[in-house]
Image 1 (cartoon, rainbow, N blue to C red):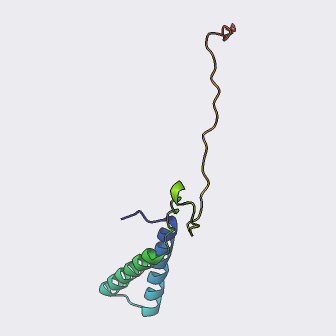
Image 2 (image 1 turned 90 degrees about the horizontal axis):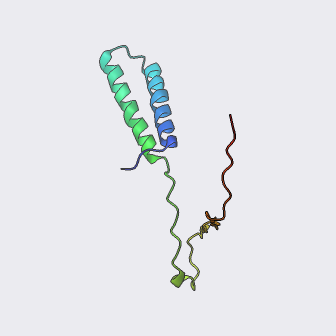
Image 3 (image 1 turned 180 degrees about the vertical axis):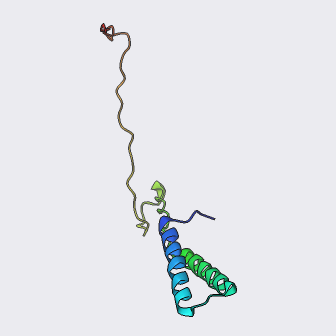
Length: 101
């Protein structure tokens, strides 16, 4: 099971807090059993809200080069090319400069 996103945690937590407060204020219960029932129902409601928040879908894969002839509805992503690196010859390098402290 994937980890919940920040939006799922925020929506679920806010739902638990506000629904608990609302149900306690509206029911005006003072018994321990009533408070437990309200708290458990708020937790279930918060879990339900957190699990129904839309999760971002992973990026679509780029089609292989052989199937490029047909246009596809898959979004084309940016391809990265490695940077060109220069090689430095050690034999021709000057002696490092040593400074006195």
